[in-house]
Amino acid sequence: MKKGIENTLRNMKECGCREDIIREYEKLMDSLHGDEAVAMLQTYYKQLQEQIEKEYKAVDCVDYLIYEIEKSET
Image (cartoon, rainbow, N blue to C red):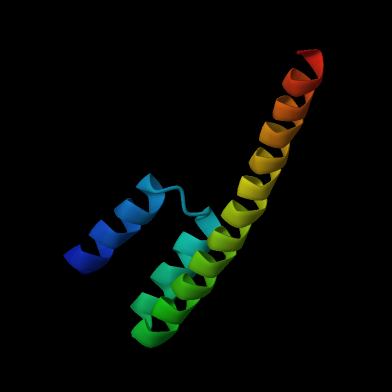
């Protein structure tokens, strides 16, 4: 395996990529389908972004609830 791919796999693990994503990336790179590997990572990135947006909305709602409770107590 090329050193660059090894580094990328290690970085993917360090940043918390799911194991199935890592294995799929490795499989695509081993079969010289780099464009597909990048497309797969871009899709995964978009999924993470959507998840973050949902979590941010939940945090925002809890923050508002805290504000409302504190406001009603004063």
